[in-house]
Length: 205
Image 1: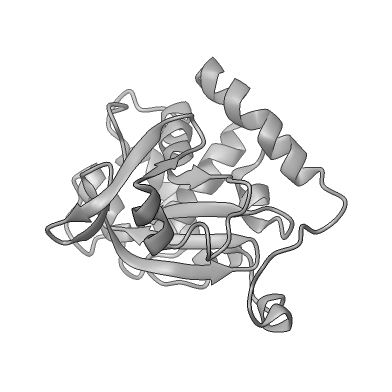
Image 2: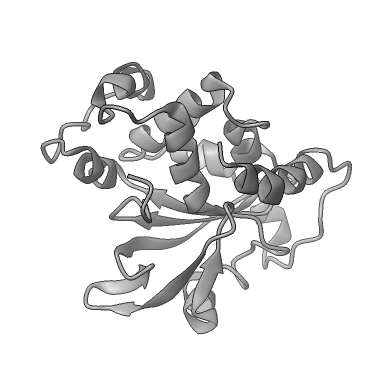
């Protein structure tokens, strides 16, 4: 785990997980909002994100981070923007045949993941990759973290301190010029999800 990432992100996560009161959120339909599941609930209930959930669990069990990614994504007091790579994105990254992960459970992907990773890639490397897909802005709600808002800002700063450009590409809104948002603005109880067609590696692999 990079020391810079730990210094930038761990205190912020600790503050989020240690909150004793729920932040006020400016969502329309306040009561309907509180019936939503968390980001983790949404990922678990969504077919096509098993690899992402499995990666989160592998990192948590490895202990390479000073906090639990699963707890953060499941914390109802958090305000998270998650750039969520699909199963297809992980298949592309790992050199798997398209559809290889289809029909597998989270547990099956988790059990297989160590053998699917390229030689020399550790749980710490997976953690570094996942931290390029999460952000904890002051207000991670649909007004400040929607696809339109990110495009207007032209950037997103992620957990490891990197800032990625957000722009229009040939296939839609892109993050870091290489990753397309294929499904945007999935609002959860504790933030918002944008699904990606490519895993952001940015020099890590």
